[in-house]
Length: 424
Ligand code: GLV
Ligand code: MN
Ligand code: MN
Image 1 (cartoon, rainbow, N blue to C red):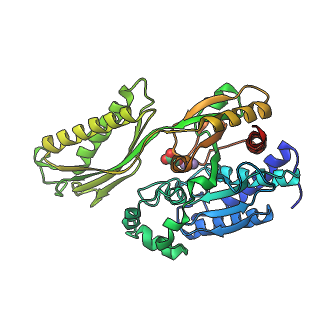
Image 2: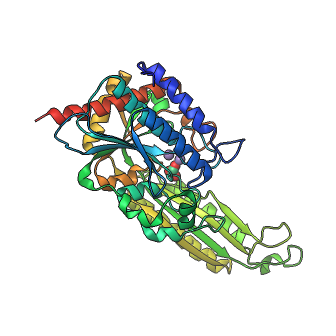
Image 3: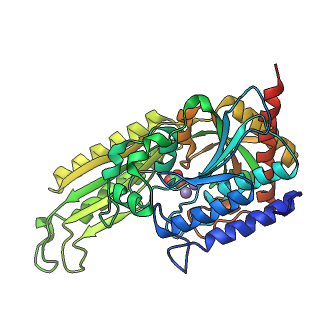
């Protein structure tokens, strides 16, 4: 592989790799790559090839994470510890091309750059291309990083996707091994920390005209499934006051969810209903059964929990006033995950050096694999500016120059951690 030197050249290479990954999709018209699909497998294999070209030894683990490892280049205080660097290669439906994928590409390019510059590190590096950060196919998120961190709940193997395929069966079909998930966890003493580069997915860096930022924490998040059972009936004959319309009930609850989130002024509370199913789903039948998703996030756990309680109260009220049956189920709950002080400092120093102006610190409203990896020790994240803060949208865009700076910032962070090894 040709050594790459300048930030611009690194950015150009990152763009070519992003383009190659974008071509691996379930649809020829847009980018959709869900966990444990043939597209996920093809993308993981391509990433594996790149890892091997960068000199890493690879393996696809039992949960579908492509892992590329490099042993320490010299002796040091950390012994055989590994610095874990990762992000995800699954996407949402009709996705942008940089979310997750950029972090994997930047990780590989950082290792390649360190090798090209002849750096021998006093710790190993493992690059992890996770397969389920988005939680789109199954109603849980971070499956692969949870396995890596040893916090995967095996009960999740029984959950199903929209086609009623269990996570267990999907994993077997992919070539994974549900029986070996526990063995895939790192042991805490073998881990130096976890680093991730990710697009900001918000507007802060662009407004500040700064390419990179330091993440302080990831917001508290929960996901729920709300189900409303009403009664089907003829759209032409049942009078309005005799209906048990599950969709009208859902509409009332969804508007209340929006109002509850909008009322918050200080906790960055957001609530989203992104998926609705209506049954039987015919224009001349009163909806009998509606299921919808609910995603709630906030800067602190308490604000999020209070919002979920308020939403549940509204659901109970609608259950009574509209004579339907409303059930609220919690699918996942993740507390605020705070980035490690040592890594925030190292990243801040690296970002300041690379972008030539002081690094800004910011919180992440989006979920990331670091929420799982925090169970193994400190985690840290570098955010990269994206155009207009747009993400989960094909219009997602990052400049070549910013991608190059992201590689340089990751390289600098790794070098700073290596320098800390020398300090008494
Ligand atoms: C992942 O992108 C999430 O925050 O939902
Ligand atoms: Mn992501
Ligand atoms: Mn995402």
